[in-house]
Length: 317
Image (tube, rainbow, N blue to C red; front, side):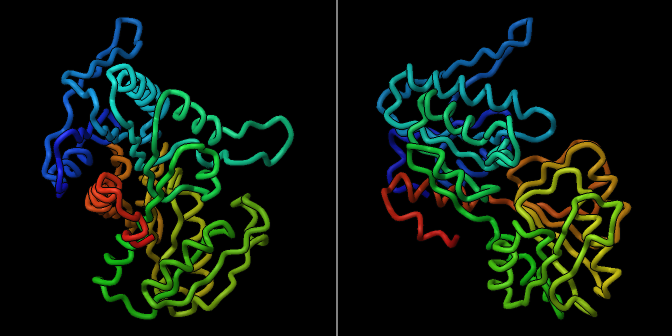
């Protein structure tokens, strides 16, 4: 709960309304009043319905999910502009999920660095700080010239698995870029890690796959920052089973779940997939195997720390 709630406004837009309500309830304040409408041609029309002059404002909005990521981005940019023109003291953008983060570098000629473009757009529109959860790549923090606070959802996921009291755990990184996350979860659960060494991302060629580490007879927990089409994680689970894993779980901070992802999960050998509510789950599809944990306490604590000018390192990263 905030010690001083005066002159603090938390606004939620359309990507995470339930998460925003959880956050403001934990902070002991009411959510800011605003409306999002559309003109007949689909253009977004936004209005801040209370005075925010001289206030510290927080905008909770994910960029991505359910095919509406571009709409959510425009909502966010328009709202930032509205707050700036209404003389807000600070505009703190809370991004549970930072979309376009996978395009964080050039992997070939004539390619964009879209994660940097998004950073430029947020900064130029008037954001004064960004608070986000589990970036796809840590170097994205350096794309901004304003403060960026990144917190980790991995301790939330670790606490859940700790309570399950699974035996003979091994934490599995499905590719090289996930090794740091696997090491972090492994440290929290006091478990060894294994790595899937993929020389090719063509799932039709299993000869390009090597499993580094002991998974025989183990309970494997696959970890990555996001799950999108679910093809990577279901393929990884098959490889682990072929290499002797007893059972397979998977965990992700961001449930993007595009296309037929829920169907892929339902038909896989994965026992359970654990995610957080940085993005809402699809309204259709088989989600029986998916467990959702709330990061509202993490975000509420981060907002309180920023507002009270304390160190964000007080939150375990």
